[in-house]
Each structure stands twice: as structure tokens, then as C-alpha cells.
Image (cartoon, rainbow, N blue to C red):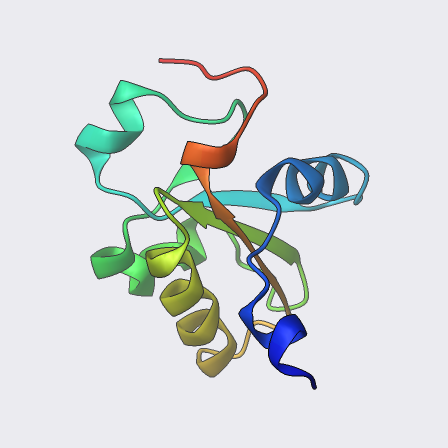
Length: 106
């Protein structure tokens, strides 16, 4: 892996498109409930990073494709790592909503 590929940030817009085109995929917003209420990507489920152990309410299947985002990409990176440690096999960190150009709902 080169330095440039290591430092490349996820493209949330591309990630949302991939999520929309993946059957059975689940979109997780790991920000706080307050941040989620201020605006989130439609169809996303709010599972704050600190409550990630309750993700089973949203994703019972450990093989379900999970797409994770937050505000800037830092918490979603942590969440993706934790979800993999929990046994989820298809986890994708799509980055931060600050770079998202699509529709946001409140």
C-alpha cells in the first residue's frame, strides 16, 4: 500500500451510491442523536459510536453489508474497526457527512 492510498479519505458520495446499489445494505450514522436530528442521509439508522454494542437491533446478520458514516470520518473509521472486531464481515467506512452533496433529511 502506498502512502497516497493510505492517506486517501473515503468519498461519502460514492459510498452512498454503493450503499444504494447493494441489496440488503444498511447505512449507519454513528454520530450523536443530536447531530442526527440536525440532518442525516435518508434511510440511515442512528447508532452512536458509544452505543455501537446495540447495533444488533439494526443489523442482526453479521454478513449484512454495513456502510458507516459520521461527521468528518474519524468516528466512522473507529466504528468500522469496532464492527469488524464484533464479527461483522462487510463493513465500509464511507466518511463524513460534511462532504456529502446529496439530500439530507431532518
